[in-house]
Amino acid sequence: MAFDFSQPLAVDGGPPAKASPFPPRRRHGGREKRLLDEVVDSDILFYWLGTKVVELQRRAAERCGRRHAVACSSGTAAVHVAVGALGLPAGAEVIVPAITDMGSLTGILYQGLVPVFADVEPDTLNVDPASARRLVGPKTAAILAVHHAGLAADLDGLLAVAREAGAPVIEDCAQAWGCEHRGRAVGTFTDIATFSLNHFKHIECGSGGMVVTDDDRLRYRASLFLDKCYQREEGIRNPFFLAPNYQMTELQGAVALAQLEKVEVIAARRSALGSRLNGILAECPGVFTQPVPAGSRHSYFLYLFRLDLGTLKCSADEFSLALAAEGVPNAARLLTGGRPVYLYDIFTKRSAFPGTEYPFAPDRRYRPGDCPVAEAAFDTWITMNLYEEYSDTDVDEIGLAIGKVAWHMAHRASGGARR
Image (spheres, rainbow, N blue to C red):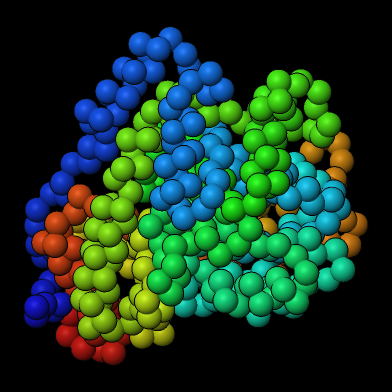
């Protein structure tokens, strides 16, 4: 399909490229209602006495290709549960990506572990294995592999680093339902992995999470960790380690069960839409999409593209505003506060817990310049949603909008006529 990117920009008085409204989103329906009714009729909302969470765990394990799945209250909780199940010692270090959600880090800090931030790859924004390798030291206890925005991290590289370090890898698949790395589903490459069922994810139950593993011991430790270390399977209430309460309710389990039935259709549709948009943007000057390795599947929790500001001679903010005028909602600065997470106050001020700098080691400081690729990314990347409800026409209009803005910015920079 040929696109005329030279049409006048909407910010200059031209018609917006997005000529039709986006379709409405309706994420819940009859199946969710029926399962919720069953929970209410049972008069049991507590997971241990009910059936829905148990069934969700069985089906999620099957869906993820793992022996076990353990449901919990959020994706943040899931990472905490995974870290707790591994039994990492307080004061040890966990290598984490510089660009991620705070939910990836909360449990690490609560367990008294020290995050060490690796830089990201400039073309994917996933953690760079080479940077992770440089951070390995005697205190390295684990590596967190976050599959950012629905694109798999370089698991081959990260697992090689982990083997050299003698440390486990935790896969954080919060944004990666339906994502595949070289023909294999993410969440199946490591001893333990986590997923999110937060409102904003591919599938959701308001808030919820999942830990998956093939290891019987890790499954058992995870089930204790999310439930105050109560040994419910044995009928014993004698905690032998500190653990929070991250139980999933039967109501959450019912909605998540219904949502799980939809995840493959959602991921496949988003992947198809993302591939279609990638094809359109391949023609755009100064615009680069995330590369997807052969045999892999990007599930597009978010759609990201990078601007070559040398070609376009505009800022990401200027590009974003012009694109919004074309009828395409988007954001510059990657939706994470405009900075890598290590520049949040909690790290720069070492203020995780009141009145102390715990768990940060005296020689561990977080400063601008630590991860230059990640810091530069906030000035050059644009983020958009790409929902499964979108039609091919919606995506074509999005592509036209991005192409128009890029064409005009590039021609303005080169002194060409701006129509």
